[in-house]
Length: 405
Ligand SMILES: Cc1cc2nc3c(=O)[nH]c(=O)nc-3n(C[C@H](O)[C@H](O)[C@H](O)COP(=O)(O)OP(=O)(O)OC[C@H]3O[C@@H](n4cnc5c(N)ncnc54)[C@H](O)[C@@H]3O)c2cc1C
Image (tube, rainbow, N blue to C red):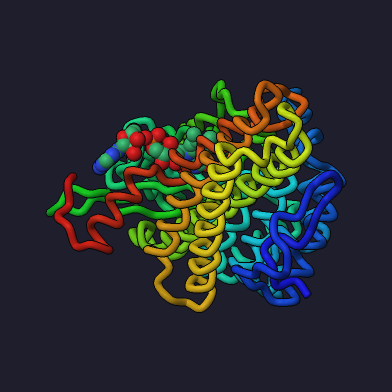
């Protein structure tokens, strides 16, 4: 019944395609998840989302409801309170919330990155401690890799974790860390030693409770209209017990990739959902608005760019669900996840821009809920991984071209 593209039409939304035009197919279970998430998301809607964001509020009610329904933890193992499914299902959840105008950035961070890394690498005790809360949404975990002087170059990470008897001591600064104020802990990428030959840092991961003495954070003024805030985080001799280490000391870079591919897939899903949101609004408006006695949709100057934007959103969705499928089957998802993230970052901007254009002056008003999403969409070219670093990956690993840096 639900083999088409977007089968759910929330209040005021049109279907983008019919069952006559199936391109992506989903299982019955995935369609059920989409319908349920759409029902929740459409009850809150974009107005709720921007109202919270503009007032400095948080989307806690929506988060709690999505969590209580089992959707935040859909990819986490059943033995840890999750749904026992995978990134494909989490992508459905994230995409559908974006489609309803409620892109929740913390879904990329808490279940997708932190949940994946902890489930794959932490001790049983750490899994029991954190995963049930992450799955239900009652606990949130932020993720910190970016630093003022390291940026895209993780080898230069300068937040150090040094052993001091039985404990670890963390020092240094991370920035652009999402949702620290709403999180119980941060998964922090640190340097625990250096490779003598290459000088590159050997990285290790730690779960650091946000109320740890010596940990402080300061919000960064952003133009982004999103309920989540971004922070600079300071670690001043933060003491951690030995069991705060995730997995093996010095193996953090390898381990963190088990979070970064899900991060890319989840980031792509947000972009795809927002792309659908923008295109649906454009379609509805173009079919209704008349300025020359016929709907503006009849002008190919409008319908063709929308069709092109739709094609690119659909291609990006294909790449995203293919990446999720590879990830879920334990295969190497790195190329697919990078391609999905790149495609989504471009497709969402094209879709949103063309939707704004379709709406004429109305496209730039608050009432139509498009222009306010510009920076969230634009973010996807920069984060979770920048467009250039994806191109570097593809140049080197897919094409075998010489490394440029
Ligand atoms: C809203 C928001 C939320 C974020 N949330 C988090 C979070 O929760 N946790 C976290 O750890 N980080 C987070 N980030 C950080 C984000 O991942 C980084 O901003 C991003 O990876 C780019 O790093 P940078 O800002 O240090 O840029 P830089 O590394 O300084 O790069 C600047 C520019 O140079 C380009 N560049 C750098 N190196 C190369 C190269 N070798 N070849 C070609 N081009 C290159 C980059 O692509 C970029 O365009 C967030 C950022 C934003 C804006």
